[in-house]
Image (tube, rainbow, N blue to C red; front, side, top):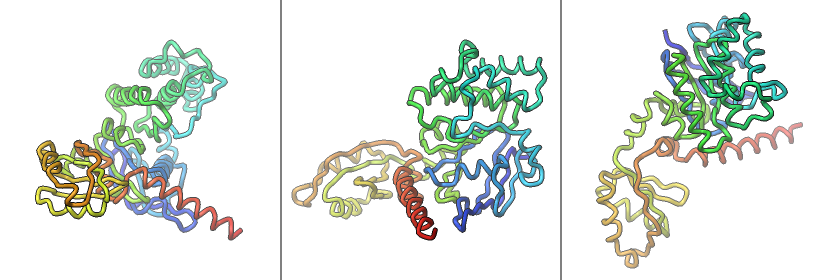
Amino acid sequence: MFAIEIKNLTKEFNGLRAVDNISFTVNKGEIFGLLGPNGAGKTTIIKMLTTLLRPSQGEARVWGFDILKQKDQVRNSIGIVFQEPALDNRLTGRENLDFHARIYGLNRENRQKRIEKVLKLVELEDKADILVKDYSGGMQRRLEIARGLMHYPKVLFLDEPTLGLDAQTRHRIWDYILKLNKEEKITIILTTHYMEEADYLCQRVAIIDSGKIIIQDRPDNLKNILGGDLLSIEAVPERKALKIFEKFLWVKKIKQHNGFIDLNVERGEKKIPLLMKIDQKEEGIEIKSVNLRKPTLEDVFLHFTGKTIREREVSQSEKNKMMMRRRFKRQ
């Protein structure tokens, strides 16, 4: 039995497909990532799997329970950390955990033991009796993760778990997530638009764009699709430089985006001198910069969608604004 099993899941809002006929499975004990830009449908998927939204079509099971026919069993099997903060900042950290445990029917002795366990897991033992309003953003996120673990869930959903946090705090949250996955033996499904987060945490990743799963696999396997090294070049005029680079037999793949030209090559350090040998004056171009790096999940996303995640987010934002204007005109 899989921890999560989804078949042809679809969700429509006023004729718009936010989630479009997706299928995937998550193994028990796995950290599985839904990676994509804002507006790709990641949170909608989470809401359907946690019974907060009813699918338009398709089916899904969480820990063997049908999300439509066995909602209570699904809810008893899962923990959720929402994208938006959901703590009571007038209570202490300990009181927030105790209140959550009472909702799930844990008795007093069990509550106290569990509170101490999860506080230790996220390293908040010394902050447990401080009001949440005095917590930092990172501390609040850690407490929310602890709260999601209080009732011994089989599956934990993390919706953009490090959104808005600084880089140092984000890395600490990553370590806590890996720790609880190992110590609690818990299945984790997380959404993120941070490429490095998905790469660092997830055993497998599904790349999502416009409500569809573009590709899914282990992060290393996804990056190996591109293979070799990437030379990211800034050159002007860009169109003329592109035509010159396309003639090089040692270029495996070429991609143009956001003012740069990416060349996929083998042994990239050996190819930089070849670029510098181009008679730029004669060719009528200027190479302003060359950057050598290994492929990332951002490059994989660019390869399959033609845009970076940031470009997709801007595009999606413009689409949403246009839809709002149309609805306003109709009204």
